[in-house]
Amino acid sequence: MGNLNWKFFQKKILRLFACLCTILDRLAWILRLYANPAEGKRPRVDFRASLTETIAMRQNLIELHHHLDGAFRCASLYEEAKRRRLPQGNLDRGIFCEKTTVSPSCSTLSEFLQTFYFFYEIAQSPQFMERAAFEAAEDMHNAGVIYAETRFAPHLLSTQEYSPEDIVQSVLRGLGRANKELGITVRVILTMMRGRAIQELHEIIDLYNTYKGIGLAGIDLAGDETLHSGREYAPLFNEASEAGIPVTIHAGEGTSAQRVREAILLFGANRIGHGIKAAEDESVMDLLIERNIPLETCLTSNLHTGTVQNISKHPVGIFLKRGVPVTINTDDPAISGITLASEWDLFRATFSPDTNTVQKILFTSAQASFAPDRTKEALYKIFPE
Ligand SMILES: [Zn+2]
Image 1 (cartoon, helix red, strand yellow):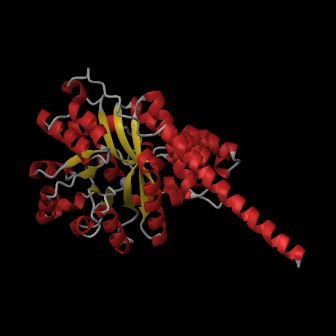
Image 2 (image 1 turned 135 degrees about the vertical axis):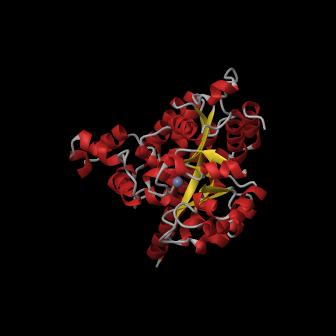
Image 3 (image 1 turned 120 degrees about the horizontal axis):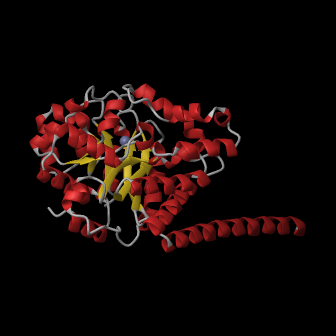
């Protein structure tokens, strides 16, 4: 009996010890991230750049719709595939890289998605994600970006071995290093994928609450809206929005203006990812204007997924005319083979916006960012209303 009691006692102590280790480990991570936050005190703004130079789009850019998993460098993916002896690493490097980027003539969602299917397994490790986060920030820095929000679905990148929290921590660590070394501020939006269990959204909100002070900016809903409306997540998103968590919803990309209305009224969205179908309904455009809800516009991405057939027909022209707030972004820069600077070049070449329009878009980006007030104040100094 005494022996049994002792064994029971031993088991309890071991379990308590394991639990204590987990808590200490998590605490250590959080303290380390606090010491080196992704957010930085304020973006390292180049105040010497005049508005004309900024408009020339090589400085002081703001990126609000950027998927981290659409921004992996091909060379890094290839190296990782080789390091982990994954079958993709046996391919010739040139062929491998072709599979991670769409062709310039890509115009279907299925071709676009093929790239993700090819490389996703390679990215599923904290080591890779830390490296990828730093490199994505470096690529944005080189394209003239000073403030960005990047997003990813932690549950898609986690494995049996690594939890979604492991992935979030590694990304924040990579972005913290980028902030320290390059001065760029990149914050993180956690993405919930349509069609996944609602439990994941609860976990995403928990993760947001744990890491919000050290680089988490908000939450997002993404995934094919033609297959899943995602309406079942609306009450939880709306609750989160009312509790002060910034929310952006991918809506009205390839469906209808009604989805944009729902994102605002049911999900409590503060911003809309794409939302291009809003152009088909005057009342939805009015709603966006009345509530000052900006669209995260991604020109080349819309072309590559076949959502618009011709860039000159992109509804961003309609939105600007109607006064709907818009911002210019990349979506998946590595997959589309673009940068934010090249997207601005495309926008300016296609729509010939005047200086006031450009100024307005830049101000909208600063205002619509999910940044803390001190960061926004720094951005307003470059982009006054
Ligand atoms: Zn997107």
